[in-house]
Amino acid sequence: MVLALDLQDFLLRARVLKLYRQALRISRRAPGDSKDELRQMIRQEMENNRTCKDKQRIRFLISDGLEKLKRLDETLDMQGR
Image (cartoon, rainbow, N blue to C red; front, side, top):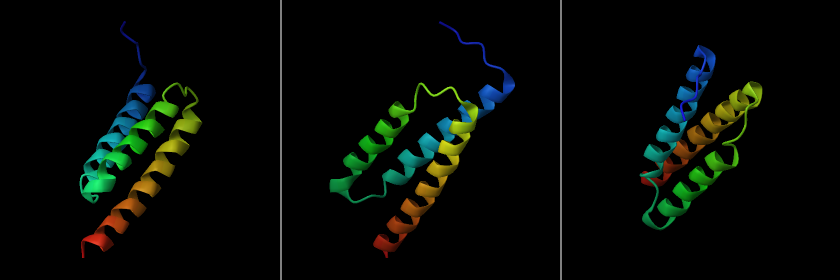
């Protein structure tokens, strides 16, 4: 089944996928024992909001996810030092 997306939907979907890939990339730097748990949490968060169609809520989730990702990145940087 092919979904027809308008340009705004396409761009929003691209932002979501970029956030997901970035989160998985950053999760690689986590300590070995928590790496799998962190990836599972990321996937679960994406799955929980998979059916969301409200564009405003999606934008909020993206900005919230970016903020959480920034904090995670900073935390992993501190642990790596």
